[in-house]
Every structure is written in C-alpha cells, then in structure tokens.
Image 1: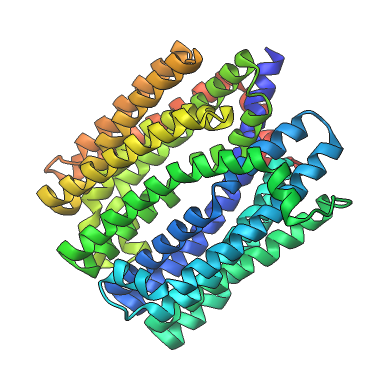
Image 2: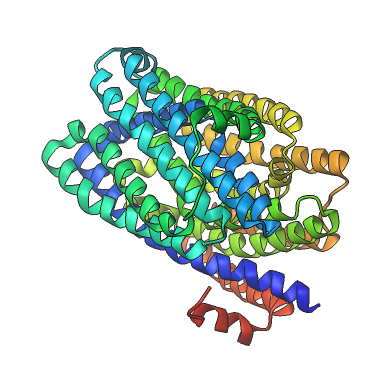
Length: 494
C-alpha cells in the first residue's frame, strides 16, 4: 500500500511541477495568440499554423525519431545505475542529433521553394522556409538536450528551461510582430528555437560532464540500435504529421487561409491548453516506463496509476472548457474566432479517451516494438486524415470537431486491444468504472449546453462542475489523504 501511495505521489508531484510550468506557458501563449490574432488576423494565424506544421514535419522527417529513442536508451541505462553506460549513451545521442540537425537544415534550405509550393501553392514563402531551415537545426538540438534532462530525471531543470524559453521568446517575438507584422512570422519562429536551444544547453551541460568524445563513425556504430528504433518511430510520427499537414492544406484549398487559421486556433486550444495530462505523460511517465519496461507487473501498476490520475485530472478541465468555451475563445483570440466554439465543444470530449489511449500507447514505444508501433501509427494516421477531411467536407469545422471526438474513441479501443493482445497488459477494472462515471459527467455537461434557457443551462452546468470537482477530490483522497496531497504543492524540493 505504501509503495502504491508513493507512486501516486510521484505522479502528483510531476503533475504539480509540469502543471505549474504548463499554466505559465499557457499564460504566455494567451498573450502571444492574442497579439497574433489582433495584429495578423485569421490569415496571419493560418500562415503561422502552416509554417509551424512545416517545421514540425521537417524536424520529424530529418530527426529520425532520435528524441524518443534517445529517451528510451538513456532512461534504460539510467535505470541500471551504470554511470559509464549513461555517459556513453549520451555522447552517442548528442553526436547523432548534431548530424541529423545539420542534415535537416540543409534539406530545408535546398528545397525551400518546393516546400513553399507544397504548403501555400506558390513560391512566395521561399524566404520563410530559408528562415525555417535554421529553425529545424535549433529545434532538433534543443529537443535533444531537453531529452537528456528528461531521461536523467532532472525534471526541475527541464521545467525551468521550458519556462524561461517561453518567457524570453514572448519578450522577443511580440515586438517583432508589432513592427514587421506578417513578415515577422518566420524570423520569430527561428528566434524562439534559438532561445530554446541556448537554455536547454545551459541547463543540461552540468549533468553530462566527463562524457566520451566520439567520432561520427563511432556514433553510427554504437548508436545503431538507437538510430534504428528512432527511424522506425520517425516513420510513424511522420505519417501523423503528414496527415495533419494534408488536413491543413486541404482546408486551405477548400476554405482558404482564414479557415486554416480557425482550425489552427482550435487545435491550439484542444492540444495545448487542455494538454497538462499529456505533458506529464511525455515528460515523466514515458521515461519512467522505459526504466521498468521489462517488468510486466510494475508496468501494469504504473499504467494503472497514471491512467487513474489522468482521468481524474482531465475530467474537470473538459467540463469547465465546455462551459466556458465561448468566453475562452473571445479572451484568447477575438470574436472572429467564434466559429470554432462548436468544434472545440465536440473535440474536447475526445480528450478523456485520449488520456487512456496515450497511457497504453506509450507502452508500445517503451517496449521498442517498432513493427507494432509503425503499423498502428500508419493505420491511425490514415484514419485521422480520412475522418477529419470527411468531417470538414460534410459539416465544415463542426464536422472536424465531431470527427475528432469519434477518432479518439476509436483510437482508445484500438490501442486497448493491441496492448492486451500483444503484451497481455490491461488496465484494472477500477479504471474503467471511474472512466465510465467521468464520461457520463462530461457528456451530461455537453448535452446541458444545448438547453434553450440560458439561466437553467448555466445554473445546471455550474452545479455539475462543482459536483465534479468535489468528486475528483473525494476520489483523490481515497488514494492520497488530502493533507498529504496539499503538502505536495508546498514542498520545496522535487
């Protein structure tokens, strides 16, 4: 029982740490989004969305999945308490990310005019992709150094690097947008990646002393397994990014840049502002899972603890988002973005399914089972593309929101079946009982939103929101007494 309580505490501590940083980053993003929305309008956000998507796609395609495979390799060495192996693995990893970073930079630079043609249908944004070529390099380097901190469980330093990078980036890019408007978009993206790299390098350099100096050839030889797994993972990530890219291009051709801007704004709200649970999974759950991945019972326990707390944390967020969606959109963007409210209300229902599917999905990655992972990713990426494009074709942005919800429901049942069949790992019935109850709360709030009487609608939704919060604390108290839970928030050391 004590071991179980400590596991919950560790997850809560990570959630508190990353939650604080995440909400601070949200505050920064609110200011940045508001500035972009006011100064650049929906078309400006459309350009920003396509360039950011291009950056992520190019970085993923040329990074060969080293960010994920590196975390797995370093975390496994760290779990063995073998300092020599840890330093050697870090040396190999660093050399490989430098090579892939420069490779990505050159590819983007050489084919900049072609990428402009693909993304925007013309070569007007060739110079923007020249800026992006350097951004690809610094993005891969910053991701690499942050992965080292993450793997070594230096979560406080990881959080500090992220927090400061976002704050300094805000101070730099806002004046750029103010003076240069749309022309500042690509240089602002580059500036943000440089700042992220400098801070990631600064905070990680003290933890990788006495590392082995190796040549490029030795890096490829010693890092063969890491690179091979990374390439397999990058293929799957590439399919996901290509799907997202094609969706945005399809919306651009069918509805114009304004519609892409609206879609991009909705994705920011769905993936970023509601993303505290998924941030904790990627930064804390995945490295810890990689350390114990060969111990089935421990993996199953950790997955149970993570999924249980994820459901409890995300349910009130979903409910408050459904209630306050019109106000949130108006505050974060402007009245021009009101068309995304219905898309968000439908799409956010899928997040509770996403919380469980991600918990199980990380097991496949931590296992290093690239064959299963790549097949799964290709199938689900294709399904995502078809469902969202069909939704947009039939009902516009509302159809996208409905498709988003339906996709994550299908994704959860698919991943659940794969993990159970492939690894004989499944979640405790207690999780599914809690999941069912929380689904009822979310769906009830969603349905109440359609009441024609404003007073009764908001009164009943408010009561449901209060009940949900009380229920969340009651269920948390059963796992960790509230006195101990509150102490975690005021504890000075992680």
